[in-house]
Image (cartoon, rainbow, N blue to C red; front, top):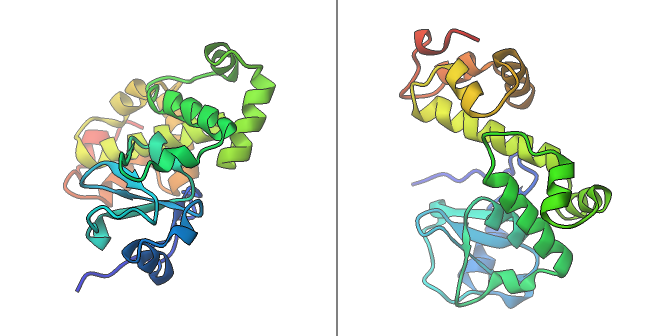
Length: 207
């Protein structure tokens, strides 16, 4: 029998634990849970309301998000049947667009001033709005996405730490390594060594 992690990841405040109550809300298509969370299906790349009557996914393929904005920012598409994106208010829609912009620029830093110019809004207003919806500043959110992308490269490629830092737009390898350790509690080399299949210390020993 598969086991399920019923605790939310403290490093990912946007994710919720898939506990029994939430899973049963999905199974029973409970409309009273709409607006409390959305669920995304890894295999389809789509996210839905709890009340959606589409085919029930396998439980271990499901991820939960507090808001549609968080699911959309990770590349999930709204279900055309239940339209979970329609639950968003105008501020959430703008915050989602900002999050999508940040997610599409993982290889570079995106200053708040640039976001303000892109979305025709004052940087102060944009920061306050984004933090109200996501709970963190755009800079913090973007940094986390960049670190998660770097972790994925460490797990799935044999690229050196220097190459990953360069492609990730970090100022230096040392800056990247410090940020990575601050987030994951491990240096990039130690993190890779703990993963499979690329546990090759020599390939990434240049941090």
